[in-house]
Amino acid sequence: MEQNNITQVHNVTPQQLKESILSEVRAELQNITLNFQPKEQPEYLTRKEVAVILKVSLVTLSDWNKKGVLKPYRLGNLIRYKSSELEKALIAINSKKR
Image (cartoon, rainbow, N blue to C red; front, side, top):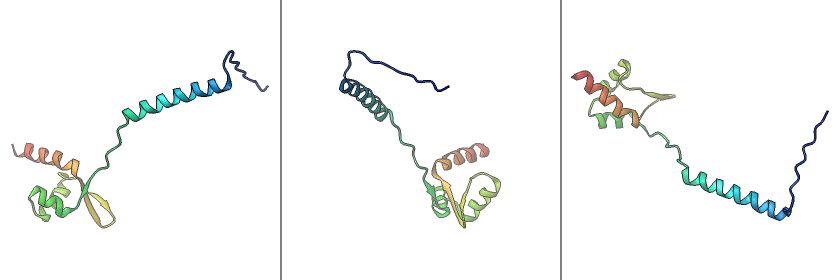
């Protein structure tokens, strides 16, 4: 029960068909490249860098980790913080003080 689908194209040479397909593909690829937005890779900071930025000690940083103020990311023994999340943490800290 195999069905054969046949499409016939009249008054078009194989070369014209090929060029028509290629021009449409090129136009679509150009549209994609114009609208392409590469995904930004997050920047990870060390504990010392975060402590300097926030102007706190490493002990305070550890305390904030335990309290959930900051979200540390672990890679084996290394602890890193996303720089994009630091601003959100600062806003949360300041809103709790008020």
